[in-house]
Image 1 (cartoon, rainbow, N blue to C red):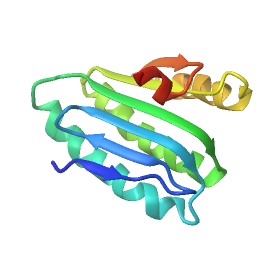
Image 2 (cartoon, rainbow, N blue to C red; image 1 turned 60 degrees about the vertical axis):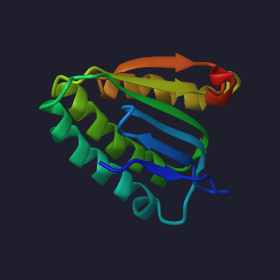
Image 3 (tube, rainbow, N blue to C red; image 1 turned 45 degrees about the horizontal axis):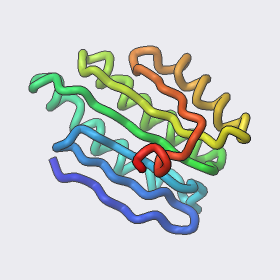
Image 4 (cartoon, one colour; image 1 turned 180 degrees about the vertical axis):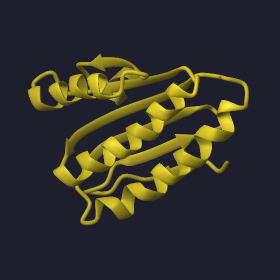
Amino acid sequence: MNNISIPATSCTPEVEFDFDGRTLSLAGESYPENAAAFYRPLITALEIFVPAQSQGTGSPLTLHVALSYFNSSSTKMLFSLLSAVNNAAAAGIATTLHWYYDPEDDISEEFGQELSLDFPAIAFHLHAESYHDELR
């Protein structure tokens, strides 16, 4: 499976899907004019990746999401993307999501908490800091 690397723009997040390393990340802002066109290839890649991995090594899958802003159409696509990740977890792949939010952003924090309820097969970790701060 080919890795996916998309640089951030003013309205789309940086995407780093390292399928070999089993680490996926989204960072930046997400309010593309057509959220479905941006996210659909990412969701499709996950939908292809998950069944192939359920037969494989069982190595954990880690997702890092650090979106400082996302609009309603991005929210819908994030749910679809996380549904694919939840399917991986339900198939027996240990799956962890790290949700990064600004400590002053109650909406992003609450959204992360809601996701943890909507996708119970995924181990959630909420971080009141930016993803890039965590890497330093």
